[in-house]
Length: 297
Image 1 (tube, rainbow, N blue to C red):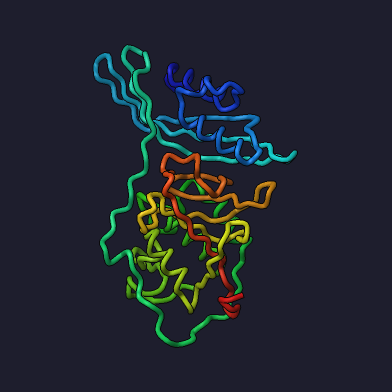
Image 2: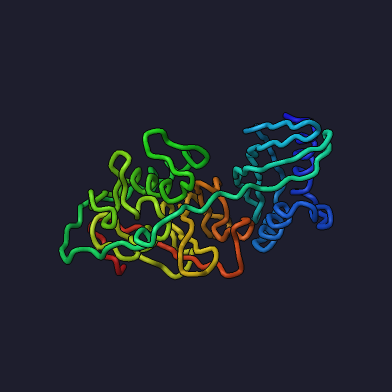
């Protein structure tokens, strides 16, 4: 690891646990995290950060390093402790070993056609498969693959919804609709339904499906169970950009979530500490319904 980069890591670890707000003003990520935890009567008591260099380009006196950081935060809330984790890709530039720039490389938004933002309504028939959603297996899968890719599945550059679909599938949710990409929820080799991989399409599918994988929308996040899904419209423009799965609860019973693309584990559901967050953000909360359970509770 570049010595200057290592010094930067060491400084940041201190910033996350600093009691002096002015100490974090040069690193907005730490500022956002500290403010987010303070709103929940929680604090970061310990941080570990380790990184690996992805690319190193040297051009005379200039050096550009693309690197990945794995943060681990030990959180204290109401006398209890839990660990949150996240991955971040950043780019640093040095001139004669002096740091002149360091910024986050935000994940690219998945490019979709208008047709991929919609799913067809279910046929007017009852084809419910008698299955029970195994929430434990869905969460176990989310814990195993939150920061990497399962080679058994197709991989996307923006992998958030593909990851959530894999978690639901691991929990026993049945696929249906092949080979029509605009119908149902399915993956077959390298072919897939829009709802399997596109954030907005999965949100529509969960809201409207009456056969196979089904969900019931609830009004608040505290109503969610482990293995349930939260959908995020960061810009508040009606198109949902991101999905997460509930893998834990904090001391107040609020969801902690795992996700890909913004690779994170046991992150507070609201995403206020994310660089993607905007004041216009909107959420949808879906609890997964078993095969013969009523959608209406």
